[in-house]
Length: 223
Length: 230
Image (cartoon, rainbow over all chains, first blue to last red; front, side, top):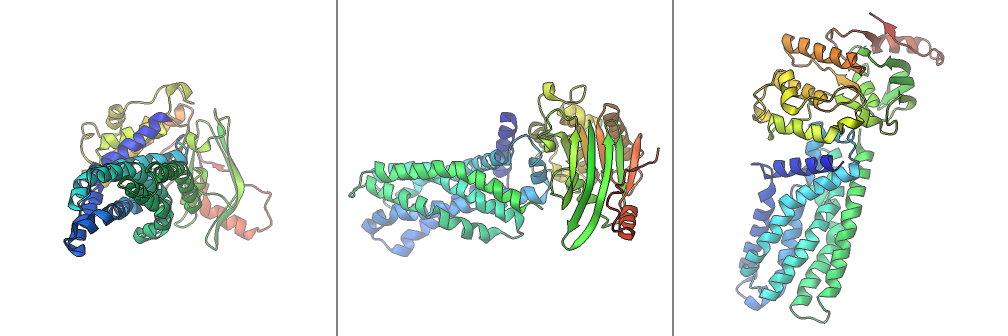
């Protein structure tokens, strides 16, 4: 079962990193959001530093949703999904494997790019550190909540926007506590640990519930 | 080991495709499903593979080593080849071996499955393993899909039009692979329009079955038992 799980992670990662696989797309989108913001806000460095964490989190959240619509849809279209149902690997774990591969290809590059992009928004070192930590803990939650939307997108043709509409409301708590924890790190009334622990809890919950819900959706929508 | 199907009914939308369908496939035998387009061949095979749920009736694999895990005993080759075009042929095959295969100690049939290279050699794709699937022809993709049946050992093969896009040599090759599988004690159910040259095999004509059950709507207990053709 471990062999099947790792094989699925490896394959999805290889597909994402190939040309046209879409792994770099999230980072490019993230970069675009963050670079245009200072132009829109104007040269007010204090304002940028204050809203910077929120801008970065919104950018990372939206970038994490990119490519989710094709996660199961591509497998449904070429017949691979049928065969995954016939593996000894439970569908829940297959969904988790695909989620891990998607996060490694899309979410992790965002975490790596965040410190560089933080400089564009005049964030201080403490805020950059806190932001990267919250993104590292929070983006897996977004990806794994997104698995549910991805599973439904496989059943409908052209489910691109559907995923964002389905998944976005579920990710609001992650966004709130991610930004709150970053804000707490650079001064505020609550210590960093309080919102950060809730964020970690949300993430752990999503890691377990996301694949289970996605597997249920895949089973229900199977022809 | 044998596949037992009883009083199976299938519906697609509002249309009933077949009902009161029953047959048995013994180990070491093949069942060839024929019938006109739209008779329900592909639907029947998806039911048998556990990929769809029947309206009524039962499908059981008697004597399987792990009866709970029906899907894990079955190889399903549908109209779609399930290849990733961006990956190489060998990578595709290696992935399916890891996902669908199982340790040899738990294998139901004798002998261990061939490796990825050996299986590609066997279906006539030797030396093409490093090429991405995108550059293979339709027939070569189908051959690669057949190689998937070899690298992971499973007792029941369910094949939907297995010889589509295959040239005459590859068709003969497929027949040889299928006969070897049957000779090892495997089971095989194939839907086809072209003669497959399988022996020993029974045949099931879904078109004739539909005509019979339509004329006799109350003959529910007269389960169809398959006609021996060889």
